[in-house]
Length: 286
Image (tube, rainbow, N blue to C red; front, side, top):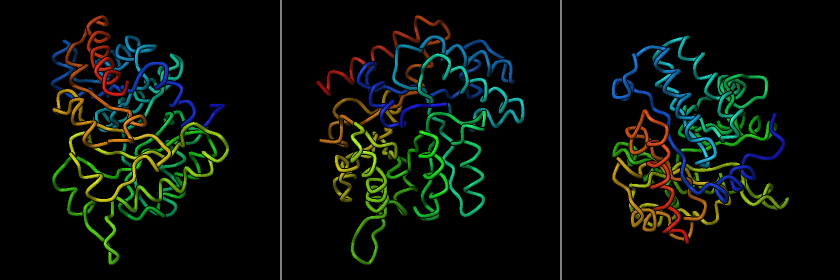
């Protein structure tokens, strides 16, 4: 069981290890690159080697649920092992599953991924708010009750997302801005109690350019972390992070998968690749 809210634990990890989160994305091509079979055994070796190498090196890891689920029940067993291994290593684990539904179904997801009673519960879970932010209440409530966190999709880098996320309501407010405002409201109580960072974060792609400012997202007012995929192999660098996040940059947890994982399978090479990205992030936030 956890003893402090997720936002407090993440703020401490970022202050100590830097603002890098490494994705654990064991797709078939990457397993082959590491000389591993595309099966549950290869999956286990890959994921646990990443955790062993990067524990004490980065703020967090982010397993992508889809790459485990594609192996069926055997893959889910490995995912449980990975979450447990990260916890044992003192490494924060964010599960990228993008869950989002309504009513009892959303509550079921919450119990599966955010309750202390579940072996699938990481430190935080990504959520999709596009059935309405209110539909996330079971997950938000369960996360808070179990000192876990969530990252809610706000602005993603895929072009198809713009039709929904950039759309404006009758008052001219962008959908992504309403998501950010709702997340900020959830963080307010935690911050009022003296927490350094709230536990409700946003997902904002590092490659979306100046879309946050153009759409009216007040990222510094969020009061929580910003998960920013896209650095490294996807092309975003320091200048892109400054342009996209501006004054919100201190709260950014930048994520990279391929730029680090392709350096494997040797642990030392993984550490060096992660270290180079961490140093780049430190240089722009100094």
